[in-house]
Image (tube, rainbow, N blue to C red; front, side, top):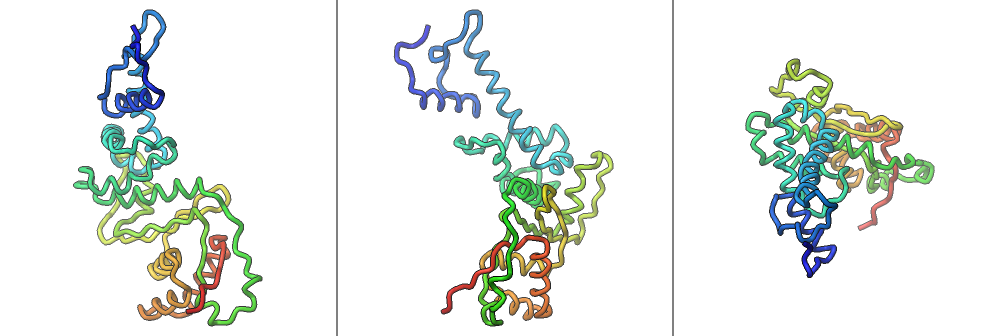
Length: 266
């Protein structure tokens, strides 16, 4: 028999979410109307069992290399642990993996696989790059009359999906393990720093290792540092002053640069 006092939609949603996420919450028998010969517990169990399965599926799609390295059982267990810490208001499965790289930093799997957070960060960058809008590339004609002083105070805007991941691990090689059988994975991890640029070419996502000076310049420009300060910093570290101009030309030719604006004068 259904309760005389019926819950609001919000109360029912919160109760159902609590049952799915943690197995706790109020009994739903008096709140859920079911056809004859069935019971509410059996019908709710569909969602209780289905929710973690969907989370595992979404994570496996976004993090194929992490899943391959861990193996089915360990990856499913990781996904289930992670799902318990997910915000209840998350409504888009495409965004499920956003917090996984940070979550892995404190998960027990990194005791044996310390590179997993950085690998997950790279795989999430690839996933986000694929789904990001591709904006029109930078048109240099409005800047044709700029002086060297103007260029020194220029701020560079990049494609929304552009990613840069740097870590003391062979990230690009580790990512390729999703193509291998687990028994064939054999990656040398010792002293294998990598700096990986992630960007779109049409519908394809390019994952490219770059040199440290280019990565330093890209990271600084992405954070809003003006072009002149980036050039000076690289020169102080021993790089050629012309290096940034070369990087900028390469990025522009690849369509990675979308804007170039003058910062206000002091």
